[in-house]
Length: 119
Image 1 (tube, rainbow, N blue to C red):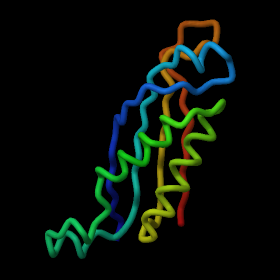
Image 2: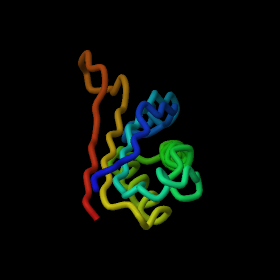
Image 3: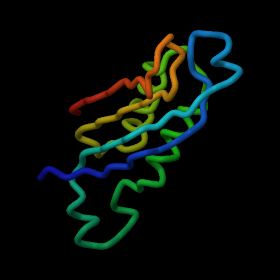
Image 4: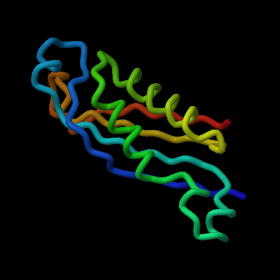
């Protein structure tokens, strides 16, 4: 069975970047997280303890976005690693992390990194 839970548009103000100004000023980051797993049991039992709680997914993403790094690649890997450690039933993972208004000498809405993994 192919089933997944998605939590999209997780917005957090963070301070990632290689430039000193980015560590002081910060900007908005947004994450979309999708985890694949078989949620048949939770669907049949209507039992929250049998599923992957999307509140926890949001908390994991938020916590890792709040922890400063130079690279957003580092942030997305931390999110992926913690999700896999927290939920052994995950069979696949897709994460997009966007950084808004990056300082790249041009008019750009955002840059993004993506993480896709089958387990």
